[in-house]
Length: 252
Image (cartoon, rainbow, N blue to C red; front, side, top):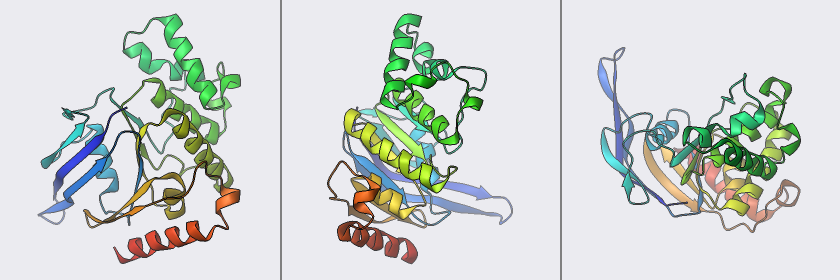
């Protein structure tokens, strides 16, 4: 794992309908130390996903720089793993083959990549599903496969773009708890995008609130770990932090 540094990052698009340039991200700077879990929240259109896509290397910034460790991001690379809102699994591959795909692309031999895949399936509680196909799994299980697949490539930074938005509320809470458990075991450097304020507070060490393409404020989340919803849902500390972040989002 390595640190992530975003420095004076901006992204400007030309809006053909408006006939003008639009600043999607404006001079954003953010440091994510090695092993920290940071959530980014903010209203729709504030630049959350644009930032993640620039960190992933899918789109180029208009100005500024992104560093993973000491290396500048110039495009997609195996040092960054991405988990999308859509499950994005290969339907013709088994769960084991999906998770082993990253190591395979790195040239890892079959026995070793299968060992790696089984290790991360076990971490995600999916060892029993190794030989199944994605269409045989629930939405929640498919997303856990997506997390295991991203981790199996051993990225320095894990990028997550609203990965639990398409599952039901109960499954979402379970996935959030599973993700915090996996994070505690692996201590990955995580940048997590969400619209859901309680989710952001539950998961993160720090929540960054965006407004109109800029960082409005950063809120430290000193809640103890491990975190479980049945313990936190009535916690005054959790409620106060969630309310603080919510008020910032509403003012954004």
